[in-house]
Image (cartoon, rainbow, N blue to C red; front, side):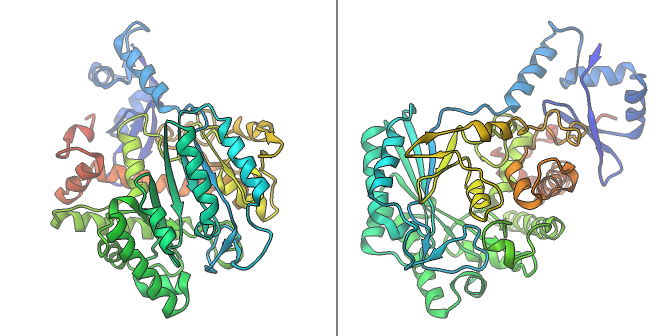
Length: 469
């Protein structure tokens, strides 16, 4: 009987977590590891491995076919270009210290789409082969260019069979025309809510008047749009993080029950003002305490709350094909399924690539809407955008669930060949998967209730916590 390669990692209970290339996992002890490493597996070992898809008799065995299918379904294959991020302006009516975009002041000229650019953007969209499209407007503050947003929206509604629009706004100043736009059924709103008013004011609004205006607009948005059409993302300064419960309370006040925590990014103005280049250990400590606070809340609440990214990673562990989040795919092929059109018409594979270019670190652009798309330089980078053969990933049991983020590596370290365990991406995700498996194998009913909710199951399934004795 053939056994697929197994990777392993010690866990806090003294056992070892084993996993294969397709994401199948179980726990066992050091005696099993010794038998596996020396080729002395006993009949009980082989029966367990075969029953759980880690071994097969021959290539015609259904266990082998199942393993191959699970392995293939873990890999991400880019679809046709059907998602674009548009930046009609870099101007902004706030000056957030942790801004990763390198925005410009509201009255600065030369950082907006002109008529020629708008026409070229519409022409670019018209050439797409996709039948459906998702358009995300970023900035700066995109609501400063309602005219450009409206023209793109009207064009897409007429050109595509289905269209969806996301407007990433700070909700600081919202006109009657802007509210009418946000109320449209195919328009969704994304904003930043850093916690309670005191935290939000320190990090974003600075003055009490602007803080009050923002929170009034959040309340109006929830009332007029409904919490299901609003996503609010807190950005956390790991040097002075808010108490997890204060952030949870701020979101519950508006009945927003999905929180996407983000540390200050090493991009834009934040590169100079925050120690964000190597902050994984501090972030991991805070993130873990936040997940624990959510577990505690869910235990006694009739309505649950989640941390979006942790739930995404959990679902990647529990099933294949969960590739909806662009930052955690394998291979992480950029510049194909979606791209960014900047204020000057230049094309980028991701928003982070736009930031890296804007600060003058590397030119990661892919042509422009005037002369056309050129993927050649980015596809050279894409040749390294998978973890299946990386020497630092092939022995990691989390490989099948994890991804790779070369653009983040370029931003932080100026290179893509730094040993993975030294990168912020690896340190943060190793910690997340450690946390996920500690919860999967936990006997705490509070943890099990939250795991069931976040995985979409009616109750916790003990078979998820497989152990080979």
